[in-house]
Image (cartoon, rainbow, N blue to C red; front, side, top):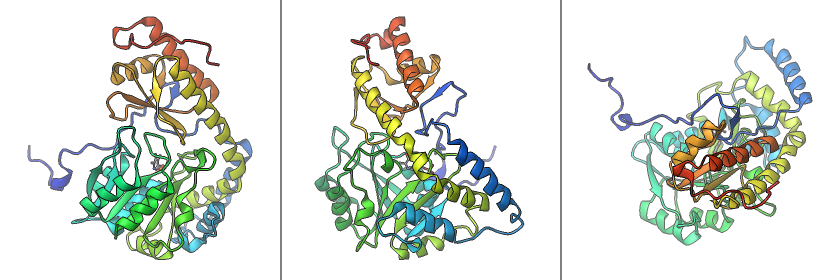
Amino acid sequence: MTPLPLRPDLRGATPYGAPQLDVAVRLNTNENSHPLPARLLSDIAAAIGTAAAGLNRYPDREASALRADLARYLAHGLTAEQVWAANGSNEVIQQLLQAFGGAGRSSLGFTPTYSMHPIISAGTGTTFVDGRREADFALTAAHVTAQIRDHRPDVVFLCSPNNPTGTALDLDVVMAAYDATAGMVVVDEAYAEFARPGTPSALTLLPGRPRLVVTRTMSKAFGMAGLRLGYLAADPAVVDSVRLVRLPYHLSTLTQVTARVALTHAPALLDTVAAVTGQRDRIVAGLAAYGLTSVPSDANFVLFGGMPDAQVLWQALLEHGVLVRDVGLPGWLRVTVGTESEVSAFFDALDGIVALSDHAVSDLAPPAADRS
Ligand SMILES: *Cc1c(COP(=O)(O)O)cnc(C)c1O
């Protein structure tokens, strides 16, 4: 059979593929497990009912009202001209790479980091360079600067808090990266709302830095992964640049309306953040009782290690009805922080695995003490 005339640089590539399995406890894609407030749901239904009458027309191409609402939510003195929105921050990143990356250009990320940065780079013909982290997954200003000088990328990705490790970056690393490159610096802050108190946002660095971009999403803390709404804050010239590559009317009327309603409920939606961070601390404390280790997390997930075989434990947890994420990092797994009962189910599954004394997980210690 003659192969399709696929772009040579895409041959042999594999698509993004976090398993979407029908499992009782899904802790693998960092969604917010908490149900959305009933009042938000009825407000969304009403607003969509009204907006539906206008669906014969294209949506506002500039999403002006939504961008003004997002700017107000972000605060930091931002205006609608400095904010851009798209279908998830993944599309925002794609538009950034279409505008600032592309054929003959490169992007640099610091592995392990968000798996979509290399995948979207590949899709846009941008060469992704796998930068390095320290042994404990930390990034220092000196290390980042040296790698930028070596590779001279057109786009630098910093992820803070970083997925899958969970830790937020010090702003001196962002400033050092900015000063070391003539390219764009994209700080992916998908998990910013979960950061430990006192963790500063790169939004504070935007004034005077026209090549700096901060991306955010409504998929995580806002609990609206199904909505597909991501956004960026940057200099207005960055927004004008992504306008050159965005598809006209990329953000549907229903998406814009729903996102605007959700923003009016922001305080209620963000109420779940405290519950999530509380359960995050419970996971970290509870894992130690099994002899497992974890990385300090500013996010709604925990990267944990110390098991004899991560893939075997992943499978055993699945057989106990709990789906976590194998991020392809040997010796580590990532668990999303769910509701209190989901976290209990995660520990019950670990208890069940220990009790089975499966040879491959037998190094797991039984819980040393009551963890509730
Ligand atoms: C989940 C996640 C996103 C969110 O992507 P959306 O397209 O907005 O759902 C972005 N960046 C990182 C690092 C993530 O983990």
